[in-house]
Image (cartoon, rainbow, N blue to C red; front, side):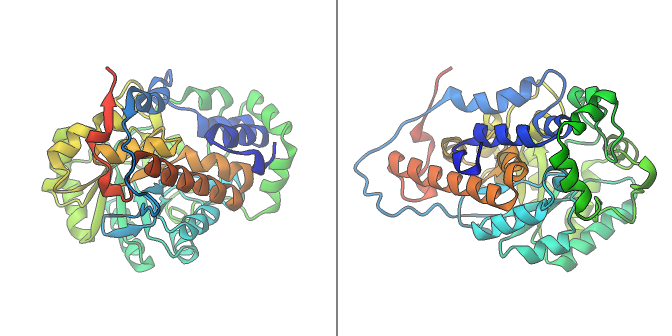
Length: 382
């Protein structure tokens, strides 16, 4: 299957599955426990119908939005995700360049495989730095200082991952970073020699945001070990309030799901929140960001920028979230499978398809700008 044959999320996923060794594909594709929340993230959109208006004069459509002070040419952004150079040797470089070309925001993870400084140079668009709260408070402060120096506009603290989710697909293959595969996992790598050749012939794998803090040599630190040993499960609102004050700029909490927590985020001075269940990878059976959107927007939408991610595969999904009051919508697997399939050209094709879908859907809805999308355009079935 060729890139030119990819017309939707599922086409990109099929190519990624063909090209990646099964342990790596399942790391992207999988989620926690029974993966109920993973599936629900997408099916939640099916419970909501669009009600279009016609004859509104839609020759020119402006899909730009401003979120956390950043102007985006379209209302989606590339959420920060870990380990991208495992999926394709270009990794974050491809995503940064593609997001810049499409005038949107992208995020670099503290578990990213390209430095946030290098990624910053590759994109003219706004950049988010996603980080975790570490037991080492000095490391937290150092990460913020480094981000400030690199010209990062938005800090994004992930708050739903104080411990790793139960991802059983990874357990079956022995997937870890550095690789610590069981026999079944090793066999899967053996039947995808092209990936192995690609991996070996490019620069060595590293985590530049953490390279002075995590010993990747000799298999000392796996990703699950990072979550259990370095992250601080005792983190409280007081700790985060201190970080928000220290950063003194655009600060976003990713992983907020309750009205109570959304209100606390406002109280401590955050400028944005992302309603997210981490792509279903943490607490299985948890609510979807889309399902929680209306009540949180009603509670705090006039005080803080509310975003959501999880399960977004179509432009119409984005329109439904915007109609409920989301300022922008995060994409994760939506660009990771294209990255795995074809590097930067894959990510660009996916973003172009999303841009076209959003523009077409806005015209069909009778809307020429995002602010015309309201709950009047929606009906829920249940």
